[in-house]
Amino acid sequence: MPSEIEKFIDHHIEVSRRYFLRCGVASTSALAAWPLLAADPARNPVLQKAIDNLEPFLTTQADFRDVSRGNPKPHSLPDETKREVGLTRDTWSLEVISDPDNPARLRNPLSKEKGTALDFEGLMKLAKKNSVRFAKVMTCLNIGCPLGTGIWEGVPLRDVLWLTQPRDNVRRVFYYGYHNDKPEQMFRSSLPVDRVLEDHFDLPPVILCYKLNGDWLSSKRGGPVRMVVPEGYGFKSVKWLTHVYLSNLFNANDTYANGNNDVHSSLKSFAETLSVPLKVEAGDPIPVTGYAQVGISGVSKVQTWLHADKDKLPDNDPYFQQAPWQDAEILGPPSVWGGNLPEGKIPQSTMGFNSKTGEPQQWPMRLLKVHWATLLSGMPAGEYTFRCRTVDDKGHAQPMPRPFRKSGRASIETVGITIE
Ligand SMILES: Nc1nc2c(c(=O)[nH]1)N[C@H]1C(S)=C(S)[C@@H](COP(=O)(O)O)O[C@H]1N2
Ligand SMILES: [Mo]
Image (cartoon, rainbow, N blue to C red; front, side, top):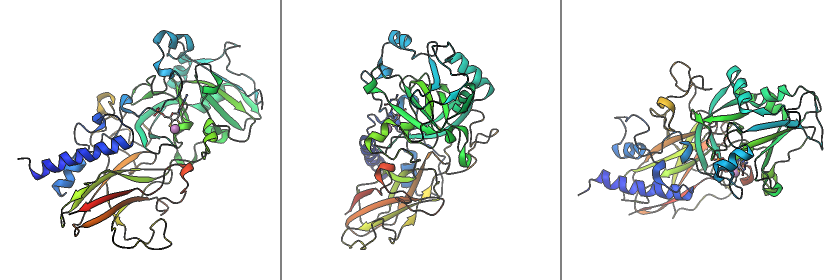
């Protein structure tokens, strides 16, 4: 006979699978092979089991969800073709030139024509002088589910920008990657030059990224080199990078603008469930776990609310700001980071981590995904709706301060629970 806890786990894993299906992750290999956190003896054992089953904190390169475009997808090209088109470390090169339509004045463009394009060796020379590492969740603005969390390493884009000796008329930087030499497959993104030159509010710099979780960036993740924009949604982080244009254009010209997206939106905070028992017996406490994306404005609280469907929802309160929300526990930094880090350690001098102890300097850390858990009190039989939300560091409860779907996912998730 399986014990109550074993029965719960079977059910719990089932529920987690539902989550992975919803987010399009095909396998449950993304489930933790070992507990994320050391057990807390004070915690209810059923809730502790749910926490033990949480996903690993960092995602291995292979376990990232892939939303690559292109026909064929550049990472699927045979090795020989990859070498021909510059998608290997020994054949890659990057042009950093003036935009012919809105010229910037550059003394020293990095171009193939002049033989000055930046190759991988050149990039590694720059990396020796100045390379940075930071943790970030990659989230697609359109899909809304985080695709994976990693430690991204690269050279600040501005270090390369300065090599071109820009003099004037630089207002925007736009860039694209290898796209099978088919203009209609080009995927382009852009930033104000201001963001490239300065890092506002302690954000990490925009980087030319060549490593993920301490390993060379795989072809699937956009290697040999991709852009990574720390606070941006995925579309800013162009893969298989080949061209950077310095431009006098003042407005955005991202491919993603075509989908009616808000191309300047920074990562937003939101909460979602990872495990919710779908059926519960009357009076039994209800263990729920989930994650919170920690956006640009941080997360001060994760809150939950179980509402009996027979009770009317308040009028004129579309974001349920008057509901009796209760604080959930935001779980601390994991004791095991996952992600196949070399020696299982956060790489030396990763921004936001103590260089001696490897511990995060702040928690929850911005631009990451953290986990939460709660044990709801037992309830009488009936149909219920569970909701969760984040409250950011400024006190804005989800979906505020930016509730619009095309600015990134923020809507409050609802999950039905039957109590028998
Ligand atoms: N060259 C190129 N880069 C790209 C894309 C693309 O289609 N082509 N897609 C972007 C989008 S929309 C997202 S969400 C992220 C996904 O990054 P990942 O595949 O590493 O998870 O890559 C971005 N970079
Ligand atoms: Mo995306």
